[in-house]
Amino acid sequence: MEILTQIFSLETLSSTLRMATPLAIAAIGGLYSERSGIINIALEGLMLAGAFIAVVVSYFTGIPWLGLLGALVFGGLFAMIHAVVSIKYHADQVVSGVAINMLAAGGTVFMLNIIFNTSGTSESVNALPYWGPFKPTVYIGLLVVFIAHYVLFKTPFGLRVRSVGEHPHAADSVGIDVEKIRYICVGISGILAGLAGAHLSLGVLDSFREGMTAGRGFIALAAMIFGKWTPFGALGASLLFGFSQAVQIRLQGLGIPTEFVQMIPYIFTIIALAGVIGKSTPPTAIGEPFEKGKR
Image (cartoon, rainbow, N blue to C red; front, side):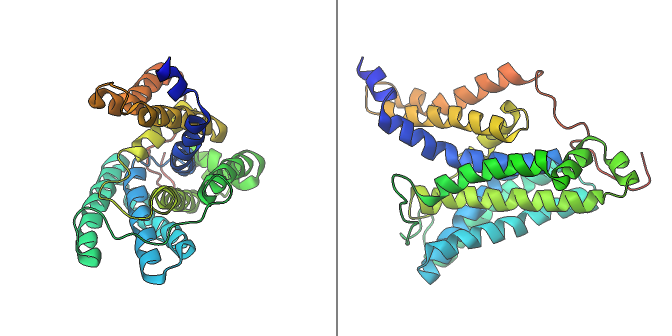
């Protein structure tokens, strides 16, 4: 009975929304990229880099809003590495994403030593203020979902993005610049992943910790797939995964083995994917390099 009380409480619901925010934002970023045909498993690294840059900028300026802006800008620029390698040089998109993740993991540790002279956790910085019960990134995250739905399904740009991801050569034949659309979408994915990272370091905490994303970028990808590459579907899946993380926190200290409790979010992820893979249809041309004039 005590366990049920801990799970189904207002605190758990509030924590669910906070935990779901970075997942939903990053999932929407991945959705833009993959709807245009570019696999983006680099969300983990982009989030980690965004979390680090947000803290660094807030540390030097004392203004967390500039830290948030810095995370967005750097996330977009960092994602361009993946875009250039995948779009211009037609490299394997999965390998490129893995390389970005490794670069972010090693680079943030290296720069943590250089800037803060530590290898674990940075100094505390000015974090984002509360707007009512939540930090502003929670409200921004919900707005991002609604904007994505409108852009992708109600605007000419969204139609171009979806056509590029489904039939790039057909889109090219009617004058759509396939590569330009893909660059834009990968850039958007980086910006949103940077925002998701900033939520962790300036919204949830007030510092950067080594490896603080802890696999959330991959869970965001799972949320995107579970949500069938739609914004509201990704939000729903993120809330499910956020609930699992909230439950994990609430169950700590109740006599349940710590190792099992820590596994809960990942068990949820595996079960969700096992139930949806084969039922979800990704964009037809996802992962396929585009060469103008070649089919």
